[in-house]
Structure formats: C-alpha cells, structure tokens
Image 1 (cartoon, rainbow, N blue to C red):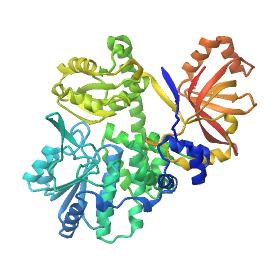
Image 2: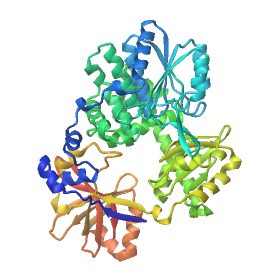
Image 3: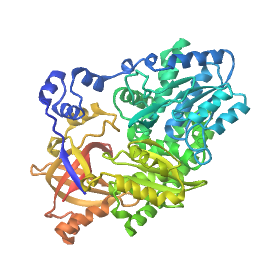
Image 4: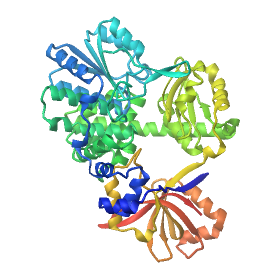
Length: 586
C-alpha cells in the first residue's frame, strides 16, 4: 500500500527564486530539501573544491600525519587494513597508492568476509607482528575494534584508525557512554572530540582527508590530491552516504574524472559492463559498485584492488571480465535467496509479523543484506535475513525510516553473540537456538503501527507534462548528482490518458506507452519491473478488453494518475523528453 504526499514548506519559494536568479521549479525543490538561505543555495548549486573543509580540523589528524611521516622517513613497515566493500576497496587504494608515492614501505590486507568477518581483528594483528609490521592504518573500519587495538599495543605495533562508522556505546545510569579504541590516533568525524563540521563522509572520504593533510606536510601539489577524487566519488555513491555538503562536491568532481579516467582497470570495468553513455551516479551505484562488491562477496576484494592497480590492459580486461562474471553469479544467488525468503514469509505466520526475521540456512551470507533490502522494499517492514555460518547463525538487516534497527537490536543484545550497524542497516550473529527468541522479542518490543508499513511517496510539485521542455531539463540538471540526501525530484499529474502500450527488454519487464493530457500534449512513458502489477490493475478496474485495446493502440477509457521523473531519450539521432513513472494510480 502507498500514500502520496505533496511537499509543501511554509516558505515563499517564488521570492527565493527572484532573489537568487533561479527558476521557481529549482527554488521549490531546494526549499523542499531545506535549502533556502542564499549561501546554502550558492554552495549547493555552485560549490567547488574551494568549499571543501580543511583536514586540520579533524581530531588526531596532526598526530597521525606526523607519525606517518616519521615512519616513512625511517623506512618502517606500514600495513593498511581495509574492508571488502566498495568503500573499503577505494579507501585502501587511496592510502596505498598515495603512501607509495611518498616512498613508504607499505602493503595492505583486506579481511576475508567469511573467514575474518568485518574489520581488523586480533588474528590480523598477530600476523602483522609475525611479519614485523611497525604501523597499522585501518580504513573504513576499526572504530569498534577494541580487542585488536589493545593487542596491537601489547605487541608494540602502532595503530592509526581511519573510519566513518558510528561509535560503540554502553548504557550506564540510563545514559549512553560512547567509547573509542585507545589507538595512537583515531580519525573519525563522528568522534565526539572531533570538531570537523561535516559528519557524513564515507570511509574513503576520511582516508582522503588524511592524505590531504600528509600531502600538505610534504608540500605535494594539490592536483595530485584532487586526482584521487574519482575513487572517493565512487565510494561516496556506493556507500550510500548523503550527497550534501562536501559529498556533493566530491561526487560532482569525481564524476568528471571518472568520465575521463586514466585508470586502466576502471576503464576496463566500464567497458565490460557495457556502459556507453556518460557515467552518472546511477552507473556507479547500480553497475560499477555491485561489480566491485561481487569480488568481496564471492571471492576476495583483493581482485578489485588488483584491477585498480593493474598497469596492463590485457590483464585488466581479464580481471574486469572475472568481476563481471562474479556479479552475474551474485545476481543469480540473490534472486534464489529472495524467492526462498518470500516463499517462507507467504507460507507461514511470519507474514503477520511487524518485524520480519527469516532464517534460510542455504543463503550465501554475502548476499543476506541484499536479500533483506529487497524483501524490505516488497513489504515495507524491517527485515532481517539469517543464514548458517561456521559457528552458528549470521545475518543482515535492513530497516524503514521509522524503525531504528540498531537500537532495537541493542534491546535484544543478550540474545546475540555480536551486532553492529546503524538505524537503517545492521549485521548480527547468534546461536541457532536463539532465532525464535529474537523474532519474538523484536516483535514484542516494537511500537510499529500498521500505518508505518504504508510506503510514503513524496511529490516535489505537481508539474503537468505540458510544462516539460528543455528549460526545465536544464533546471533539473543543476540539481545533480542525485542520490541519498538529494534524491531525484518527483513530479505528479492526474487524469492522463494512455495510448499504445507495449513491452520490451530481454525479460519483457519494461512497459512503454504514450501518455497525453487534455491539452493534447503527448509524451512517452516507461515503467520498469512492474509489468504484471500494471496489467492486473488495468484489468481489475477497466476489464481485460480495455487492456487489449491498449496493446492494439486503440482508443480506450483508461485514466492514470502518475508520479514521474523526466529524462532525455537519445534515439536514431533524435533527442526527446520522456518520463519514467515511479508510481501510478488507476
């Protein structure tokens, strides 16, 4: 079920448009995103690299930079400990290549998802000691690695943590007491001691800030630093952090670099992925990112790093093709997992639960989070998918806006071996005997109500299709890049008529039809991955004959309300405006 809402802030967006020399459409969309002060509008629309914050404000960054410079000068052995997702891979690449340029005696390790789990651990520290490592630098992990940090101290290994994840805490006298590992330096904008003004950098963003400071110590040209932004941009989009403030600038600049990349491995990945258009956040988030992630899910993230570091075109294409094949395998495994979880929900009492917790022993644990996310989208309920692991049960959860998954799991921690995450996503492990106890407790303590399970869709403004023209498209282009925190604006219109419907795509999962209004404005419209529901909705209200008329291109009585976003369609040398329908009512 869905509920539609039109955003309506009590601010005069027409006046804001006049004062800032922008259109009313841009003004309205910015106001909807709480951007209405002159400086905020200027920074959002025209922010550049000069608007990035100085790294010197980051807590412990001076301490870390001086330690790194000293260890490089003394040829001490330095090891980077990364993570197996896109953010971790890009963070590792940024630190490794940058310190190599400074002459560092450096290498890297990436934990194995199955064998090691997430982040640095005591085993990795012990191995570092055996291999005479003097300094460990983590990236995209470490902020909760208390045991590993304590062991490194005992063994005489220095440790610098660079991370962006939330701090761990304990409850004492009904208050949260936040904890930070006792490393030699902890660089994390979320550290309570850190006065850095922007808290939503990804792991690669934090790694970049460290390199910026260290490069300043060495008086390295800024252009050398800025060349790293294509990797920070990929990580920023793929780690789904808010595309506001610094992140927006990073991604805008990063996309320019990616579209002209000199990285042989990245070029190969783009080519084998079949991307021919200008690369956007969509391509990063839904094609390039998942392909890189597939290495860490099904084999090792070292493959992705090998690709980025590759200097030979033939080898790069071989690795890229391997990654593409792994991603296809990942998709197949994911689809099987989704069907298994959905079947269990539909055929058991689980469907009545407010918090879905499903145990499917044979799901590959690396795709549990993806499956949980898809199931969450289907039912609009918090979803945890569990699977068997070497020492019990592991799983991942994905949540809805009104449900803080991390806090709710914290209320059940006596049933868990371990957990971590944030309000919208979490990972957990437990004994198999506690699965049913966890499901029961999560559902007993929740305050979720039936209305919380309605999917809420917010329309930026009612925009008739007759208003769409090149000027509007230019306005929308000003607002890119789109992503979390700056989603594509959505527009609505009612009572549109349909003419000529047909399916296309390899799986016939795309509907294309012609829409027109009472002003005889015609426009092509697309619906993705919802063909069966659309047909059933038509038949339910108008009957099968009206649907048949649509497919034959005949006059019919069907009327449609839509929520949509416009884009350009380039075909046979012609450019036209088309719309993608996000939701509809018949």
